[in-house]
Length: 274
Image 1: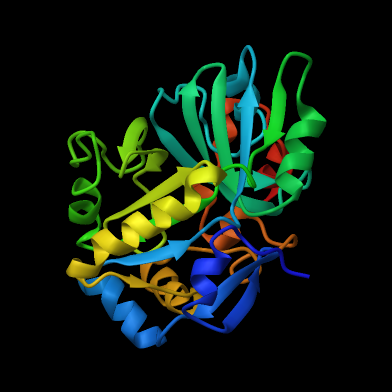
Image 2: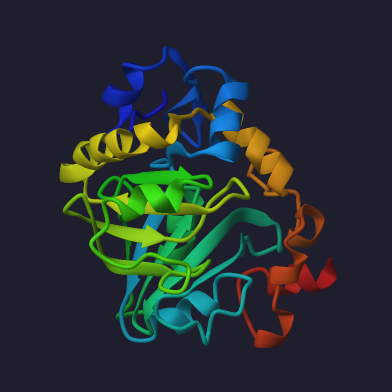
């Protein structure tokens, strides 16, 4: 049975068309997929991404520990930067495509879409490293499209220009409509985009503020069918379509993220064979 997200009361007022996405209940269509696609390409689109799994990994050497798990070399990742890559099983086959977000050498966040992520990190964590699932604690909205920055700038208390927040960076000191958010410059649409992680207690307040601020810009709330159009156009991959547990990173377009030269990581020997 699919798990509802905290935004379901707002979404249920807009649609009765739902689908399961990574075990969570997500809207498949809100109005019309083509209209939703056009809104994102020409204005802005808001979507619920709370189904993505989020882990807090903390302790001495947390970044070095993560470097021994994911395929990407994240050993020199600087605070505020994000690295995208793969998480593999021991045979070098895909478990997840994921991001590592460096807060500092001893604190990072990991974002993926598979419950096995938590199992793998917890199973490998040495003494002193804690791995905590914060998926439910931090609901997750995406605002994408050419008007996304203008909408957020009308609500933000900090500079979020490209100079202040470039692609694949994040900020933790931003408030949107007075609400603290963890803001990333990421997306799944090949458009200008931001992701906003927010504490559960203020999630609906953030939703309402974004909907109100986005309306004059033609922003639309969109579903997952429209998102799939963006994903395909942008060349982005998703578990269950481009890969499954029989596929290596090389076979799904993530071979560039496999840093065989960095030393041991989960699945390295299998990746070398592929």
